[in-house]
Image (cartoon, rainbow over the protein chains, first blue to last red):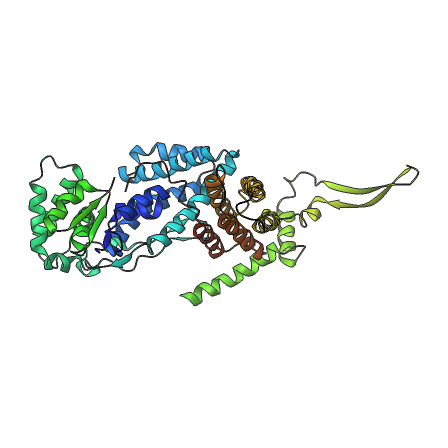
Length: 267
Length: 205
């Protein structure tokens, strides 16, 4: 019975989404095997998905009405990165739909308190589940010191991540990992370059991968290059006998083919 | 690091304890005195309340007795804080949940009690805004309400509600985050999907 290796999209859905979506992830996992994930996946979720939710929560603490929050989430075209805006918007719209379905009459002040209350416990509960949903491995030597989000005296969540150190070879194990598996990542770069009509994310990944491979071992690199290569690193980290569980078939299928990993994608 | 945070937490806890304590104390008196000193020009004249009792004699004759007169600030000292009112409400809900738990979970009487209990859970919204941890609990209870309001309530869910109300009742001061998390765990173990509100949006993972 093979283990299931949960990459970021699958782990997020297992931990933060409602039960029907969780069941989809669970049914994609091979029966009887363990659930695995990696430290790199946790770091990726913390600096991406979770950070977006923390920003939204903290904004909700700063505004005076839910209407202000509505304007904030819907007028972010120029303010946020696209994925951050979409994560915030999705969470906010989920909440509004829930509030409507609840059918409980609330004043504007109560609606904002309700949102703050729900979101605050959702974040804390999500983090607790995130770190316990799967056994964490760390072949790439990603940072182990990812703190839990904590609320400060003003009720704002803080999660100081060591992202400033990304790109320094001694700050993590990526430099050594790329050197040890250089041939595999060169093959991945060739496979991505050969794809017909690659999307923007694949182009960014290819460029970052080429840049990382072109530099001398032990030299500094741009931290963003590591992040852009996320799917490739995660795919390679998965144990060879485990099935990678992902919603992201588009990006994982070519990588699994190169690295000889099994993909169990779900919709 | 831990020792530092304990040292920091101790005076804060003491201040919270004094503020939450019923009746007057030197800390509250200090705040009242400060407020009196800073706000005399802008504050409107303080209300004063006269209390009377009406005594009805056997023959129908009524007599009115004056009990006393109290300033608004004096009465405010004895008014319950929202968190206390929430706690008292939870204490009553605990009794209701325990009465339901004594019934057969398959019976009509049980479901009848559960329906009443859910209506009370929905009505907890009146305590929103009282304290962040109370808001968290109410939002989680409303997520449970949304899942069960239109279907039969399993008995373990009522038991979990009782566990939540019991937890609230245990804390006479501010509910710690740990207690809120414990309450959430109780709901989840009973089968409540705490992520239920995250049901509609497309995945952006």
